[in-house]
Image (cartoon, rainbow, N blue to C red; front, side, top):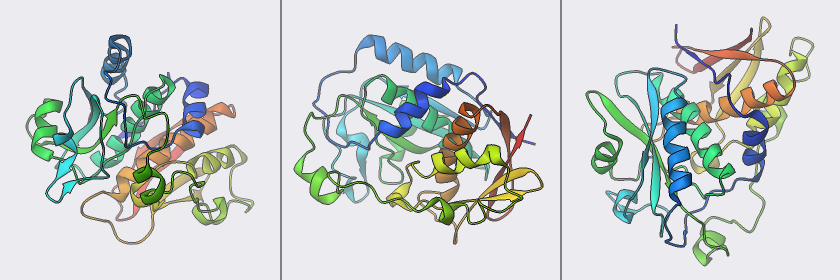
Length: 269
């Protein structure tokens, strides 16, 4: 049985970062301070909730990292460093662990005042593996640029990505359809609310939460996708859920599942 939990997570710090964070794709080109790089490197080494996934820090990168087979993804410019989220290519659960672990690092980077952006699929996979020191069956599931974002939202960010508008979010009743039923634990409701603001590929928000015998199961809607896994998106939302539950005074852990669409089960204790 594979479990995920970060019992020593700075809950309040990361929840505040989750509320404030927006994806940024345009950076001012300046280098991330050595102090911040050292802090992120330490976090990459320390925050390993699962043996199946890890995060790595690339202290210096070029824009070539963010170029896939069809060119630059999202016109990411000026980033000086990057985070890389790595896991076993042979494990169906590794992408979930990579999303969960990666979001912890992205929230820590946000708390340090750095800009980030989840990038999946359209990056140079071979270069990313080299930067992450990947070995054996390891693959890089996703990456994030790191740097100081442009003070003003750029024209591309504003018109292509709608950054001047509030990001649309599915209602809590949509992602947790039976939230108000009697069998939904009271302790789990703040978690569903926090999962609403989790980032996902194309803002698709595929996670769905349901009560199951005093536990909460997260699954994804529709079919799995080949390039950016919905399980990775669910891993991101799972961290948000857990942080909010802990902030409300409860604690527990995730058990990763192997069902076609069921991703993980959260239980107290």
